[in-house]
Image (tube, rainbow, N blue to C red; front, side):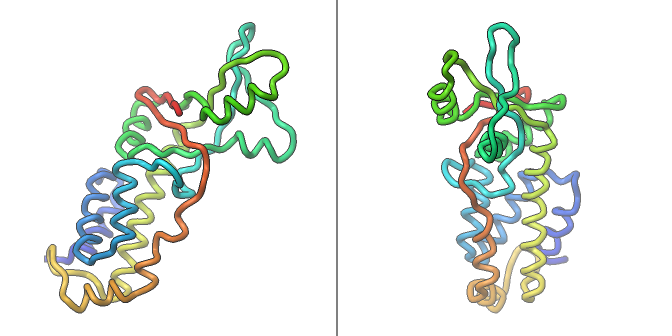
Length: 208
């Protein structure tokens, strides 16, 4: 029977394999090889992020303000501040992202992060109002693809270092190789960034 690392590669390439199943198998490999940082990354993907999120979870979109006469209207910002309010991070568990992607008909929207609302209302001389962040469901697909690609890259790195496994087990040599390799142990180092979080609800809606 082929090793679990090769199985993982095949499943990462197969879009029909559920991303949650793929993460569970990757967790099994990381746990057996004693790779704590990769275990932690998988745990965050499964349970959600509260603070820093990986760069691939930052999505592009448009911030809109509620106008009682015209409804939701896009906000036009000056200079570099435009970039600040046209990007937001998604800290939800991967299962919630999958569900929102399946339920969305094309766009996702929800309350802008509370820090944004406070800032924008402070500098809005006309009136206090509510704000939303609107994006495309394709941005969610980018997150799902990024997770799949990182698992694929990681499994290829393991194979390149002679770590394949036999069925669901690894030799002592394979475990020692994984633990001693700085490249393998530091694989997740460049994943993370800082940004305000939004949450996605059923039907493609998002909230902070």
